[in-house]
Length: 264
DNA sequence: ATGGTTGAACCTCAA
Image (tube, rainbow, N blue to C red; front, side):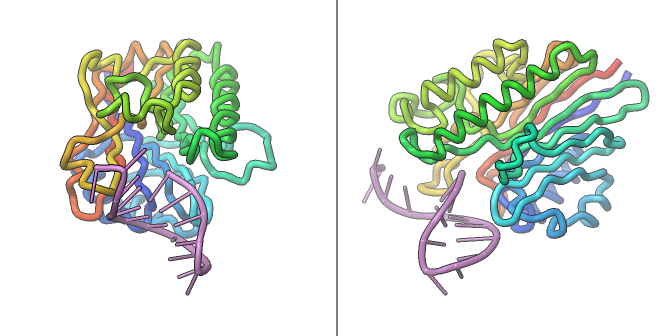
């Protein structure tokens, strides 16, 4: 029997965040980390620094914006980049791979769903299309025997309890009915929101605006999630949000969400 | 306080 932890974390620039990321990797010692918003091409990723902490690395970087990665203490196999074969989409927002444990394999993916800017914008339309593409990707996993953990910044707070002021946010990006419906559709396919499964009634957030002292005032949103297929749900022991590092010096505006899984 | 912070890269955009 092995226990592993799998985390998702939007770091908002891996270069600017390196000291915080290194400290958190040392202290929390997660086995697998799904990163978003690297904001660099693969060549700019601090590969040696992360490898020296004991991680294998799979990257899908992009200049200035987006960029996702998988870090794993175990070997990584079957890496694939991008949601589908849409070559017209230049945005690096999805990477998938298989974590090879001694006697098991776990498929993991890191996703960075577009923010969407405003409901009447072209970026919001892109966000809607992105959810449809993500849905099809997850459908293509149906029937696989392995456990699947899809972690990322979904830029959606699923329910009223996932947001500090649901009335003020109703109809805004990250809490718009159309986005919440897309997120529900992912769950209705058979995927489980790990945090909500582990803590059905707790109000907790994973993102706080840099502006206006939002973190200090408890004004956050729970928009970073681990979605689990039935096999991964059966293995999940606990899931929590490691919000302490949001108060560190030069923090990301997101906190890591960490799931603990019992393998075998 | 529906205001105004952060990062990357450029003289502004994205979040």
